[in-house]
Image (cartoon, rainbow, N blue to C red; front, top):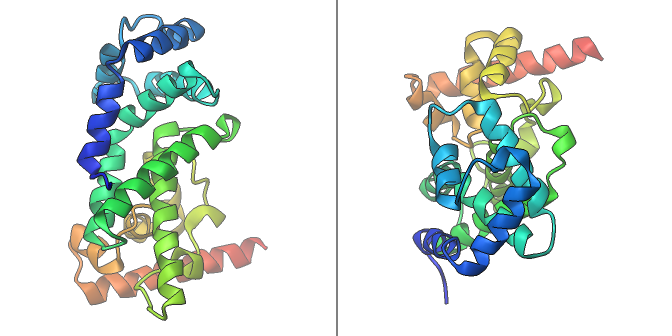
Length: 240
C-alpha cells in the first residue's frame, strides 16, 4: 500500500495524540530545560510554527529534540515525530518543488523525503550545525536532487543543472550559515547574482525557474549563472 504526502502528515499527527506518545513527551520534556514550559506537544508545535518566535530560541528547542531523537526508545520516537512535524512546512516545500520538477513518482517522493528527513535528524552532528531547520531542509532537498541527477545520468539524460557536475557553494562559504548570512557572504564574492546561484544550488530550482522568480529571461539567467560560477572558480583558484 502506498501513502500520499497528506497521508504521512495525517499519520504523524495521529501518532502525536496517542497515550504512548504523551508518555514519551513527558520524558523528553523533563530532559531539556527549553521544553519544560510547553504543557503538551500541540503547544510546542504551535510555538515552533509561529513566525514571530525568535529563531535562536527555536533552534535551542530543536537541539533538545534532536538529542532525544537519537535514542532508540519511546522518547526518541516521540522526539523524532515532533521534529518532523516542526519541519513539515519546509519539508512540504521540498515535496512541492520536487513534484513540480518531476524528480520521481509522487508516492515515491513522499517516502523518500520522509526517509531522508528521518535519517538527517538522527544522524545530524549538532556540533557542526548552526541552524538546524535550514540545514536539514537544505540537505534533504540537495540529496533528492543529486539522486535524481545521478539516475538521469545513468539513463543518458542531461539535466539543466547537476550540483555534482557543476559544484556547489560549499567550497566557498559555510553552508550551515543562516540563509540571510549565506546570501550576504555569497554577495560579497559574486555580487548581484548571489540570489540566482542560491536558488539553483540550495533551493533546487533550474536556471530558468530561478531566473523567472527574480525577473530574468531564461537566456539571461543561464548567462548570469555561468558567469557567477566562473567568478566562484576564479576566487577558489586565487585562494589556492
